[in-house]
Length: 177
Image 1: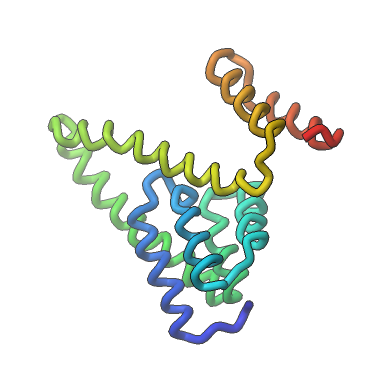
Image 2: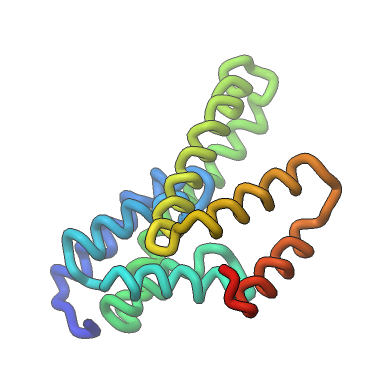
């Protein structure tokens, strides 16, 4: 869909504006909510368009947030891309700038250290939800086993992640996964 009215475009902007302040760990951490709103509620994209947009943007060189304007473009053309990107970037970039300056000036305070420590599990949970959403359509025992094995190898050995990605690509090329 490339032609949506101004009200729907403003709704797209507003939703991404709100998500920006929730995107602890980056825009990808709120992809499940983007999916719920764009695919399930608003029917702006199909499930395949949503997942493909994220995959294409993540494979491209550049910042991680590239998938946001791609989702907006898929939903409403160039105006949708601009609305989604501005919506996701303006609040979080402004808040990050202000909070970083404030936090650096007060980094010795216990509350600031506790806040930074407490945000780590929140970020990990949001990223896990995103991984689950993106993997769910293709999840099967072989893929899940390989993913778990790769995570364990990276965690417990000095084996570089790029070797495991290469091995996974070869297994996929051979049709084993």
